[in-house]
Image (cartoon, rainbow, N blue to C red; front, side, top):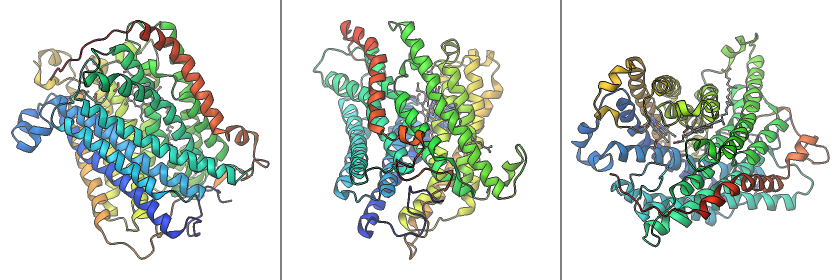
Length: 576
Ligand code: HAS
Ligand code: HEM
């Protein structure tokens, strides 16, 4: 059985050729812009890894005129690294990936003018925010907590970027609503379902950030208000700041569920379970942000505890994904002759860089997810909060589960979108293995340093070393430093493959690299009447979004209400 999700490879699409070509082109622009941002962001990373090895490379960097301006200090570099990698790379990639896939799955002809408008708007937002970042006028790190105050141009640029992503969300959601009208009684194709659920979640998630930036930070930085309440701003930030991690993760899950099984030579385990996972993410991703604020005063412990339990609940769809995707991989290995409880792992198609990169990304996420549960536990949080443990956690979540998956996806996506052949495929495989190895070393080094009490966000290589020498952390420091070098090599190999592919000539058949849509062991009926209860109940995405919004308001309004009532207008500070 073939999933109804996407046209099987080689079948002509209902989208006419001109709009399909146009849609691919917009998606390609988004994806390439995303990776250009990652390229710059990632080149700064090794300097930070060396910092955590006790090596201060910044005085040397300051001697190079061009670099002196953009990485003028540890914190300017760290701001660029966080913003470009975590915010820009992920948002641009997802805007292309989850614009293209759902529209193609639904076979809907999009307004290309609108799609281009959102791309250019996002780019203008990015370039606007880049000006103060590069001029050292917005060295406020990617969380931009007040009372640190950046130039208003930074906040305005960031707001335009986020607004553009909401327009992409709108285009996909409206296309799906239109499809539902013209296809009554039909089940949404699974890839479109996952895409629409992700965008709906993002719309609810973004409300916090939009309120913070538009309502508080822009007027304040323009001098229209006397100050801003740091606690209220942080709370609104984390309303968005936790679910944003699922906005980074779910696009990878789309691939792990819908495409990876076929790339591995197997089938998606259960279409119904895939839908359930996305429905649960839609409902439970947002009302959890206080787990980033256990240490913040003036928020009741009761609400922090409620957010903690909801955090444990939002781990459930990831656990479901772990078992479901592992079953799909086992199915693939069985088809290739693999047997045994774990013996089948050897039989996966380890020569395929796209599959290998994604499986390695998943392995990293086992540890990243386990660390997340530690962070979320109110009792453990004080031990790890604000230590190097936290960057350890998120480099094997966003830095690997997400980034390595996106990198591995480009090995088929870029040829698919551009009609070009993957170049230097022999370098693709070592690039993903080295990324995985580098990030695992990094994670061991940073988690270990965190447990020893080393703080995050510290230019500690420039500080007096006595205290760090006394901690006896030479081994994790060395691991962190080595990981930076390994990751630099991995990145150079990967970008060599990507750039050579982009610069190579087109092939004759633009669809020569097909979308690797997987079949399912338990597929769903394409009609609601024939579908299982699980598929029928998870189909009404708008109702699930309504439930998500209600739950979010229930757990946030009683927290935010008193903050507004006792609003503290704190003037801004420029600490750099
Ligand atoms: Fe997190 C901090 C809790 C997931 C990213 N997180 C961060 C920060 C970032 C981040 C960027 O509760 C730092 C923010 C800052 O700058 O201050 N996180 C969690 C929890 C989860 C979690 C409970 N985080 C993520 C994901 C991220 C991400 C995903 C990005 C993509 N995180 C926290 C908390 C903090 C935090 C606290 C605040 C810490 C503090 O004190 O400041 C959960 O969603 C994790 C659930 C995941 C699992 C794992 C499932 C495993 C799967 C793979 C299976 C593998 C297979 C492979 C099948 C339960 C799906 C088999 C292969 C073979 C070869 C056999
Ligand atoms: C922070 C290294 C790639 C996202 C850091 C820190 C280090 C580091 C050592 C901690 C700095 C500190 O707390 O003072 C690296 C290396 C990389 C890499 C060596 C690979 C070459 C990535 C990627 C992402 C990412 C791919 C996401 C897509 C972040 C974020 C921060 C960070 C969001 C936090 C910034 C902050 O605290 O304000 N990185 N990183 N990094 N990294 Fe990376």
